[in-house]
Amino acid sequence: MKLTKTQREELKKKYDGHCAYCGCVLGDKWHADHLEAVVRDLTTGKPEKTENDVIENLMPACTACNHNKRSMSL
Image (cartoon, rainbow, N blue to C red; front, side, top):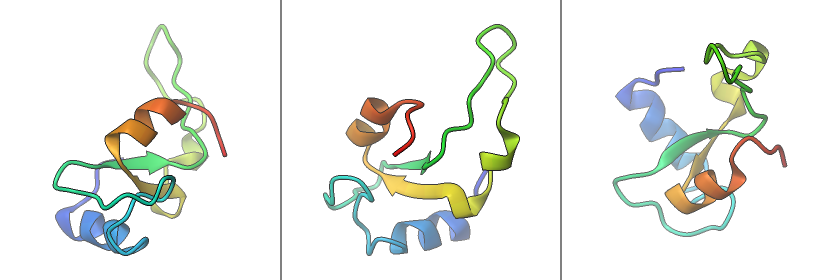
């Protein structure tokens, strides 16, 4: 899901400018992470769990947390 600049700003404010997972202060480069993963088919790249691709399922995450979490759900 492609977020607008305003949506990204609001998402970042959701945790007061901090990563939802480790709590570090987010800089300019951070990820909008799916809390419940949108699993993609490895061959086609098409999402299999499209119901998870909604703004309510997004969390502000630092790059390290998003990469470590991968497609796991919390």
